[in-house]
Image (cartoon, rainbow, N blue to C red; front, side, top):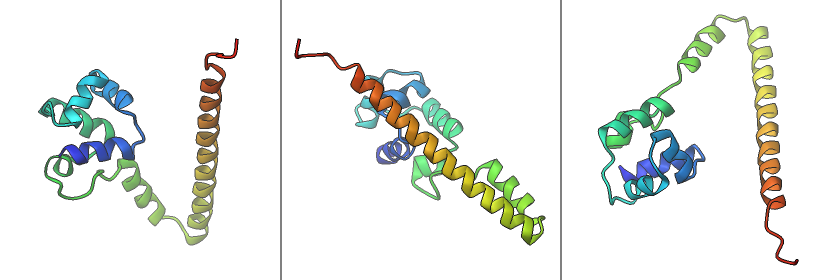
Length: 126
């Protein structure tokens, strides 16, 4: 289960510190759980599964898929199946454009964050 816990965190692109915040614990406490020095309680299993849409069966027993299907996904598929082919094609095009825009925004935010970190480095040359 500990490897699956780590897999969830890495799949979601969280550091130990940021993942621990969702659980309401310190990074040190979370690290102890992930390293097997402290048990992952039922409470935290529930929090992880509810917060990140993770399958409890997968987390605890390794069975099935990591994530439960999204309720949005099910609704989207239901709506999509009722559209005429031309509208389906248009919706698919729009979804691809949204994904491209989202990725550009995420890349921009990542670059901006890195630049802010670089600009705040101490000046050792003085």
